[in-house]
Structures are given as C-alpha cells and as structure tokens.
Amino acid sequence: MKAHSAASKMDNPSWKEATRGKFADEYWKAMEVEIATLEALNAWEVLEYDSQTMPNVIRSTWAFKCKRYLDGLIKKFKARFCARGDMQLEGIDFFETYTPVVQWTTIRLMFILEVLLELKSKQGDVTCAFLHADLGPGETVYVDMPLG
Image (cartoon, rainbow, N blue to C red; front, top):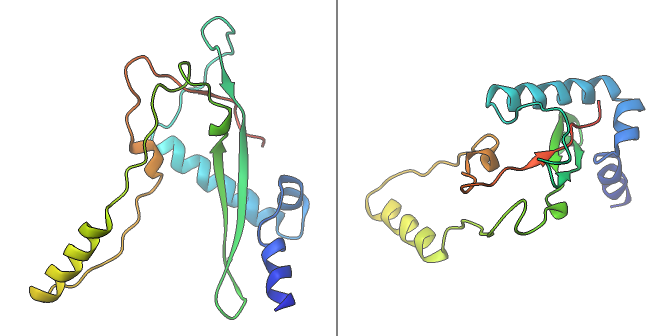
C-alpha cells in the first residue's frame, strides 16, 4: 500500500519536479501536445496586456500526471494547461454559472433501452470539452500565458 501512495505523489509532480526531474523530456513533450491541441482549436488569441481593456487577467497553471497501467508501468505523461477559474470575478469574467450534467433517470432510461432494444453502449470523450461552451454576450476571459 505504501508503494501506491508514494507513486501517487510522484505521479502528480509540481512544475519544478516535472520540468527538471527524471521525466522532464516527457513532460515537456506533453506540454507541447497540449499547446498544439489548444492552438488547433483556436482556443486563444495572443494580445498585448492593456489594463484599460483587460480588467481581470486570470493566472494560469500546469497540471501534470504520469498515467500508469495496473501493474505500475508507465502508460503516458499528461500535461494540462489550466486557467485559474477561482480567480474570476463575477460581473467581469462571468455573469452566471452552471454545470451541465445528465440526470440519473436519463442514464437509467438509456440502460433500459439498451437492454430492451439489444443495443450496445460505448464510452466517449470530448477533447477540451470546456472550450465547446459559448461565452455570453460581452463575456471575454483574459488569461496569462502559461509558464514554459
């Protein structure tokens, strides 16, 4: 059990640990993949800082993860660029919040239909799902460029 908890700590390194540690090359490559993915989706536009038009610039951070197989072997290295949403100011960066979730009754109904109609379900993932939400009129979010 101790080996697992130790591996968990090592598998979520800080910026310094990821970029200067044993797997630095792998984490730098993971960051390059993340930036390329976000740029391919036109996630941002690089602007010069202007305090008059940018009332609240949100800091950013990197989140790192070493993904492993069940036997402990390394599967892949992940790096995620994260905007610090906790720094947003209501009325400036956002005007309302919501979380789109599926109700359990809908999930149960889908399983029932799957059984009755002899269908097969599959799991899917949406790349950068947060980017597919629309900002409201007048909503613009300014985020500092990430380290690196």
